[in-house]
Length: 290
Image 1 (tube, rainbow, N blue to C red):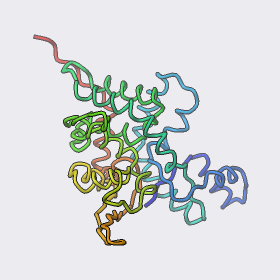
Image 2 (image 1 turned 90 degrees about the vertical axis):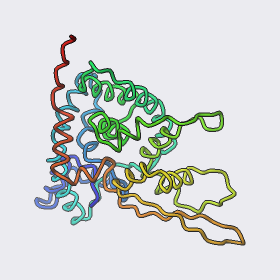
Image 3 (image 1 turned 180 degrees about the vertical axis):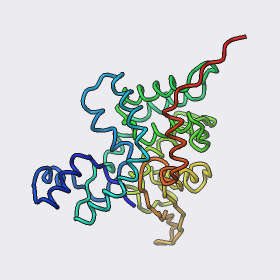
């Protein structure tokens, strides 16, 4: 099931076009038609409001309000995406291009997450840290629906796989490897759709490490990231063949990416409701010092 970026007003206009033969909104819909690119339901909810020059306080208030609607929207998105497909529309926002730019934009936020989420203080409220994560995401021009932001929120609220990815040992950093192992994991989470679509190519054993090769290595040697990627519907396995007397490693993908945040949770109403409740619940009072 593909989830498309749906604007409720625009979908309504398309319905009117089909049922009432009106034309308003249809040109806009067709100009946004980019088959094969997917975005998350939460991003669909937030993007329109967050790109209108809101102050930080207004943005955070919008996030808190809109996150409560994830489960309702997800069900609605399934209905509307089926409706649009049935009527030859695939209304989406491009999400598969600009991987290098996305990587550059993401690295400062990754460093912030690792510093922030590995040094939580006992007297800090979860809501305070959540707001800080969202504020920094906005500073680095990352939408709240970005996989890194969702991973951070999930880690903050106890999602074990996301927590381990962000909090595990930073690994060795050298001149030749300026990014730690954990940071590479996070970058690859951010770029999962791009790597799968852009770097599906053969990698010679004797060649330099390509981004695709890093992705293949992570998916086939890192159980934690493999499990996380599997929850996104991404799997990979190596295939070794002989070409001109040399071994060629080819990575075959099973790509069924439907959303860019925890589809396993999104498709489970109980788990989703629990996560939404945790994200939106008031912070517990800080125990008084004794």
